[in-house]
Image 1 (cartoon, one colour):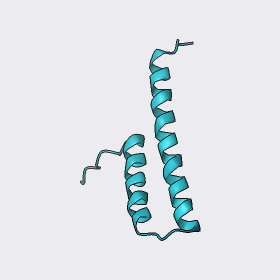
Image 2: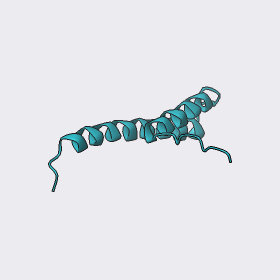
Image 3: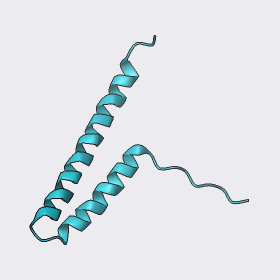
Length: 64
């Protein structure tokens, strides 16, 4: 029986997707598609920062 690989964390998936988009961005000419990919990279960065903030808050928040 095959053993399943370890699942990737949310942070790892965000980082990998951001790297793929940055690589794609490097080959795109100026224009609408480049702007859309750049905006998506910004969204991934914001998601990463929000996740980090929420994880810190989650550790210190009182339990109900």
